Length: 256
Ligand code: OAD
Image 1: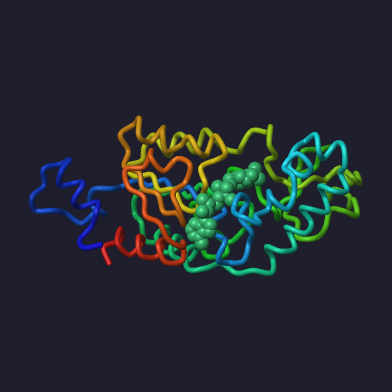
Image 2: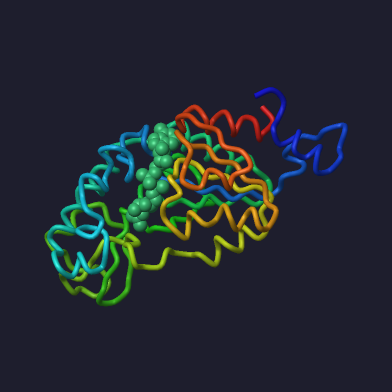
C-alpha cells in the first residue's frame, strides 16, 4: 500500500495537507488477537474446517457443566493442548507485535483471546489474556493460580493448599466471564486505533469490541485470513496470512 492509509485518513479528519507521520497522531492502540495469529505456528484454530470445534464438541470439553460431568475427558483435552503449545514457536506475526509493543511510546494493550503463551514468548509485555492461559492451573479449593506445565489428569495437589484433585485449567469456559474486561474497556476508551487480528468475531464480548470502538469514533482495522463475521464493522479489512499481514502493518505504523 503506497504511503499510509492512516496518513490519508488523518489528512481527511484533521485537514492536514502536509501529512504527518502516523505515530504523531495515533497515540493509543488496542489490539485484539485470536487463534489465526497462532495458526502458522501449528496451533489449530477453533472454527476453520477441521478446527478444534469440529474435532470436539464445545459442550463436551469447554463448559463448567462438561467438567462436572466428565472431568477426565476435559482434563485430557486440556493436557493435550497444554503439551502442544509447548512444542511450537512464535511466528513472524507474534514477533512483529512484540516489536510494536517495544517501539510504541503511546499506550498499547494487546488483548488476546488465545490461551497459548506465544505472544509473551515473542516478547510482548503489554498483554492481557482475556480467555485465560493453558500454562496456569486454578485451584477450586483455595482459588490460587499456579504456573503449570505438566498434566492435570493425574489430579496433582495444589501447591498452595495441598488438596488433591481440585486444580482445573485456568481457561474461561463458555458460560464463564472473560477476564479483565474493565481494563479492556478502559484501554479502548482511550484508544485512537483498534486492530483485530486473526479472529472470526464469533465469540462475545471480544467480538463486540469493534462496535464499541466505532461508537467511540476510534479507527478500526481488521487483519484476517478472510472476512470475519464482524468484517463490515471495520473501516478497513486486509485479508491474508498473519505472518505476512502483521509485519507489513507494523512496519507501516512505525513508519518503516
Ligand atoms: P476462530 O477459530 O473462531 O477464528 C480464527 C480466525 O483466524 C478465522 O477467521 C480464520 O479465518 C483466521 N485465520 C486462520 N488462519 C489464519 C492465518 N494464518 N492468518 C490470519 N488469520 C487466520 O478463533 P477465535 O476467533 O480466536 O474461546 O475464537 C475465539 C474464541 O472461541 C477462542 O478464544 C476460544 C474459542 O471458543 C475459548 O476457548 C473461551
